[in-house]
Structure formats: C-alpha cells, structure tokens
Length: 127
Image (cartoon, rainbow, N blue to C red; front, side, top):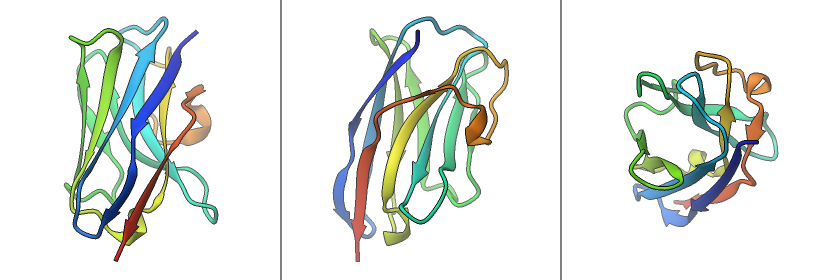
C-alpha cells in the first residue's frame, strides 16, 4: 500500500519560508493524486495543494494566493513531493499532512475522498 513520510516544518517568523517534503512509496500510477492538507485544533482539514501524476498539473487552495508551490521530484527514490511555502503568515500555523488518492484519476479538494495520510508535521508562524 502507499506510504507517506513527511519531513520539514518547524517554526518561522512572519514573512519567512519553509519547505515540506513527502516521500511517497508503494503502488502509485498516473491516476494518483498527491497533495497537502492542513489542520488546526479548531478546524477540519483544509486543502492546500495537489499535483496530478498524469499531467503534473498543480492545484491550490484559494487562501494560497501564489505564496506556496507544490512540486514533485521523480528523480528521487522514493518519489518526493515538496511544498515550498513563502510569505508565511500566523494564520498558516497548523499541522500539515501529506495525502494520496491512489486511484481516482483526478484531484479532489474534498479531504474525505483522500485515502492515505502521512503522520503530519507542525508549522508554526509567529508575528
């Protein structure tokens, strides 16, 4: 089965940058969608970004506003999905989760449709 291991995260001042990485192992295909969600203690998991394996096309949540970039490195073994986050705000403070939807054939922003989740990594942005 697909397994996800996140690295990165940590604490940064407002306006700073962080990079999250997700190592993806197991049976993925061109129909797989890989992405990131985030969650605070008060809210449900919120869609951040995704990348569709067949096309490499990225999709972002509305709040991102060109501050984050999702990318994949197929040259690495295992495949790695990165989330580069710039111009961070205190409102970006959350636990960030890597996620996989192995077989759907498109990328959904609805968190209940995603099947595989990483353990989560904390991102804290202070003002």
